[in-house]
Amino acid sequence: DEAASSSSCRAAAGAADSIPSSQSPPNDRPSCITECRLIVLQITDVYTLEHLASFKTLVESTKRNNPGAKVVSVLTGDFLSPYLLSAIDQGKGMMHALNSIPLDYLTWGNHEADIKHATVCRHVRQFKGTAWLNSNMLDHEAMDAQQEYDIIALQSEDGSNSRKVGLVAVLSDDPKLY
Image (cartoon, rainbow, N blue to C red; front, side, top):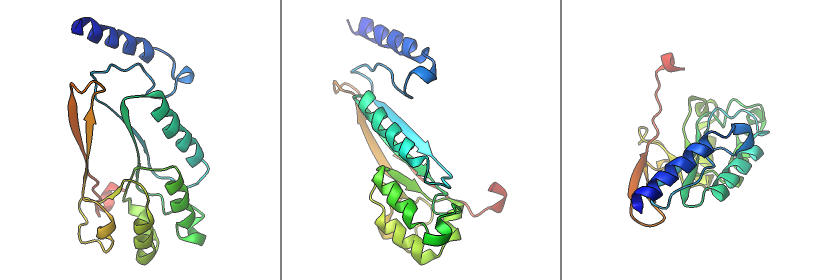
């Protein structure tokens, strides 16, 4: 029975994978109760607020359409600057929008250093998601409101499988990388 169930799960997944992406939401496929599933929705370099509502809808629909899966949303830096509104509000509007998604994880990008450090520290402390990750700037002034890493524990719906996935966030000051 287990082999037949596993085989039918793979066949169903293959059928879902063959559906054109324009007809099916991202990551929307049949799941097996023995699977540990993690879906990561990641964005980066957000310079305007206009697409965040669509990202919020994507996060909500992915969670709704993937029962049994752990869905996390991540923004991997460059969101407080250089978007135009930040020249006026120093990232206040962006943080308000990000907290309304809700976004699970934030990480640093090189452009977060474009605004005043005290303002960035205030934004770190106002983040309402799971964690602002910072794995290599441990002496950061707002480290009390950040995590060095996070571990996501996954378990299959039937409890037969479990996995742990570690998340880290590393920023470099090497200008050749940017």
